[in-house]
Image 1 (tube, rainbow, N blue to C red):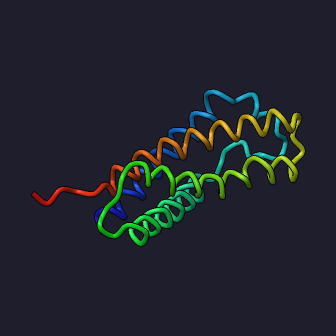
Image 2: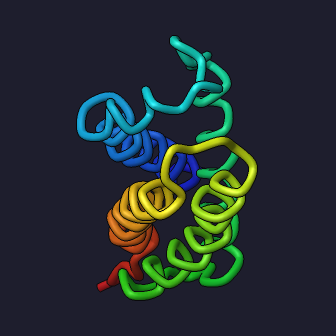
Length: 134
């Protein structure tokens, strides 16, 4: 149970740091050019989403490697989940929403999701690393 809690908290921290930095600092003009976005996001819904996603990642790790694993495997699992979630953010959102530049949208979202899941993969692997019993 402590690993699940730690994983969820780590996922929220990494996701909020990377996506928050992307949305509210680095790419402010990019997101401001999208007419359909709320001026103020509903933060509890975002935190609920991050909690659910972090829990899913934690359960996957605990089922795949119940005795612990490596940072490499943490990055592998995070990478696959990142591809799964990122494909929606990069491809579907640009197809669904009226964005000023589809290539710019795709590049911005791909950079953020790649950073998010690479960083989280290292953290996930560290949390679930095999511990020496000696």
